[in-house]
Amino acid sequence: MLPRSFRLTAKSQETPDTFTLVFEDPEHGEVRFRPGQFMMIYVFGVGEVPISIAGNPHKTHDLILTVRGVGAVTNAICALDPGMVVGARGPYGSGWPLAAAKGRDLIIVTGGIGIAPLRPAIIETLSRRDDFRDLSLIYGARTPTDLLYKDDLLGWESSADIDVEVTVDRASSEWWGDVGLVTRLLPRVRFNPPNTAAFVCGPEVMMRVVARDLTARGVPTQNVYLSLERNMKCAVGFCGHCQFGRDFLCRTGPIRSFHDLAERMRVDEI
Amino acid sequence: MSLQSLQETAPLLTAMSIDGIEFLESVATEIQFPKGALIFDEDQTAGAFYLIANGKIGLEVSMLAREAHLIETLGPGELLGVSWLFPPYRWSWRARAMVATDVVAFDAEKTRRQCDKDPDFALHIYRTVAEEAVQRLHATRIRVLDLFPGSES
Image 1: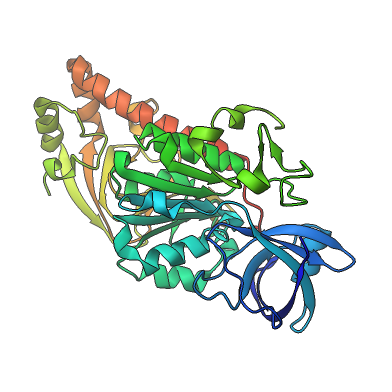
Image 2: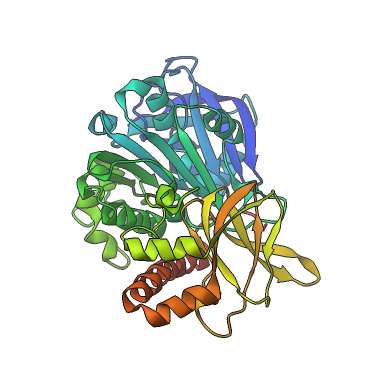
C-alpha cells in the first residue's frame, strides 16, 4: 500500500489535453506488470487516481502512463515537468487474458483514450505474433486530432502482422480515412467467430455495442473481454468505491468477460 | 469482375438466387473512380445504386458557406445508395471516392421494375437495404451520444 517515488523523465503531448509521461524509480528500479493493469498515482497535496500502464511490458525500467487532463489530479499530472516526483503504488487489477487468446484470432477494439491500456497488449501480441492467428486493431476517436500514439499507428499500419483500421466521428475534408462507428469496420477485418477473442476498451456504451455486435457475429461471450472504469480508491478491495454489482473491480477487474458483465451492463447507474 | 467474386463479402449477393444474380449482372456496369471523384451529388436523380468492390467512398453533406462535412465512409462489400429505392428517387447526400475505388453500378429503374415482377427478388433487395439502413441508424444513434471526449473537427 505504500507508494514508491517515481521521477518524471520525459513527457510528450499526444493531443491538446492528453500527455504520455515516462517515469522511473531510481531507488527500486523496475515495475513489472501485465498488460491491462493500472497504477494508483499520487500527486502530493492534490490526490490519487488510477491510471492504466501504457508502456512496453518488456521494458520494465520505465513506467509509462498516458493521461488525459479532466480533473484536479489528472490536470496536475499533465502539468508535471521532468524531474518532478509523484507517488505510485501498484500494479493492480487483472490484465488482458492473453493466454485465453492464444491460438485464436484476436480483435482489439478501442475508442478514445481506451487505447492506452491496450497499448501494452498490442506490443505484447506483436512480440509473440506466432501465438495468435489473425490479429486486428479497430480504433475510433472523435476527430483525427484526437488519435493517440500516431507514431505507433503508422508503424502498426505498415506491418503485415496486424490489420489496423482507424475511424473518427467527425472529420474535415482533409481526412481521407474512415468516418463512422468502430462496429462498422468489423466486416473489414478477418476473423473466424467461434475461434476469436476480443479485447475491448472505451466508453461503456461503445463497449456494450461492440460486444453485442461481436457476439451476434458468433464470437462466444466468454471470449469478449471488456475493461470497465470505476472510481478506484484503495485498489485492494476494501473501500468499495469501485463496486460493480457483486464485484470490486479493483480486485476482480477492471477486465472481465462480457459473459460475466452483460446482465449488469443493462443496469442504470450501477 | 464477376458478381460471384463479390458474393462472400457483399450482403446484397449473399443468399441471392441464381436468377437474381443473373438479373443484376444484366443491369451492372463496372466503374473505377479515381481518388476525389464525385460519384453523385445531393438532389440529383438516383439512377443507380452501387456495390463497392475495392476502395472507400465518403458520404458528405454540403455546408454551404463552410466546407463539406464528411458524415460516414463505406468500404468493400457495402452498398452505396438507398434513395434509388424510394420516391422521389433523389440522392440525399453527396458521395465521393476517398481513394481509387472500384464499384459495380446497377441500373435503379430496371431493378425497381424487376422488384415489381419478382416478389422473391424484391424481398431480398428490400431486406438487404433495410438491414443496412438499420445498422447505419444504430451506429448513427451511438455517434450522436458523442462518446469520445476531444477536440472539435
